Image 1: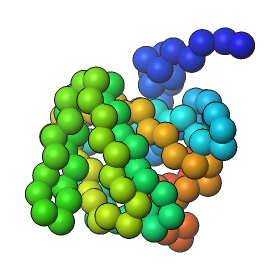
Image 2: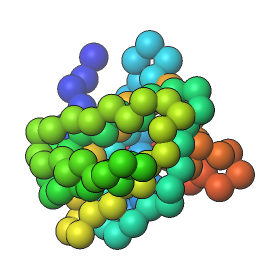
Image 3: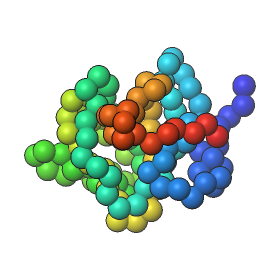
Image 4: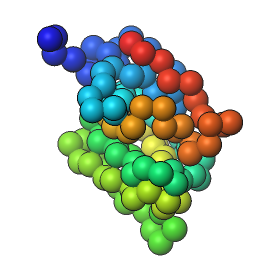
Length: 116
C-alpha cells in the first residue's frame, strides 16, 4: 500500500474539466480535477455527486440557488438534481463516484477518465 499525494497527482496535468482517477475503493473512483469557468448543467440519475475543494473556490449552481465551497469543504448533490459547477479561479477538486459514472450524466458527452 502506498499513500496517494493529491497535490503530486494534480501537478502531473494541466487540462481542466478532465477528471484523473488516482485510486479506487468499494467500486468507486477517487479522482482529482482542475476546473476554471463553467461546466454544463447536468444531473446524474443513478448516483449522488460528491465534491471536495482542495484549493480555490467552487460554486455549484442548483435550480434554487448557488452553493459556494472553499478549501476543505464538501457538498453532495443528490442523484437526479440538476447542477452546474463553476469556478472564477483555477480550483482543484477531489471527486468520488461509482466507477464508470459519466461526468455529464450522459455517456455520449462525458469526458474520458484517465488513470494517473
